[in-house]
Image 1 (cartoon, rainbow, N blue to C red):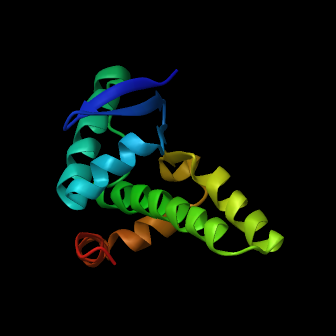
Image 2 (tube, rainbow, N blue to C red; image 1 turned 90 degrees about the horizontal axis):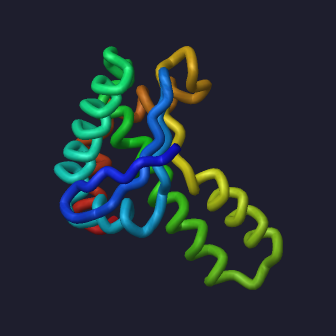
Image 3 (tube, rainbow, N blue to C red; image 1 turned 135 degrees about the vertical axis):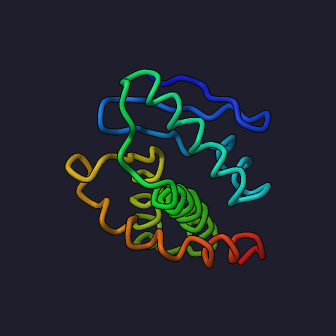
Length: 139
């Protein structure tokens, strides 16, 4: 079941399960991470990790930087896909954009043994400062 986590006056919907979490990618999340992408995202991650520990009495074994870039990747990919749908009359582009949007509605994050693409986000985590700088500059 999803619970509402309040960060900077935004209600972020999060589901905690053993070895994984899910975050709904919605307007509240987008509003939160566009204010101050790095600081707001880190605040959200800290809160989620504390809640996870409180519920399961163990840490979520995913680095904060990896979670941050995964959140950003999903949220901004969805915005990009929606823009494609509005800009092109091609049905093929609509289908592609819809697939991206549907896979970005929920951000599933898990420990390595429970998340088949964790390695991608872990690798991208090393670029977190550069990615955050791009987001702050509106790129």
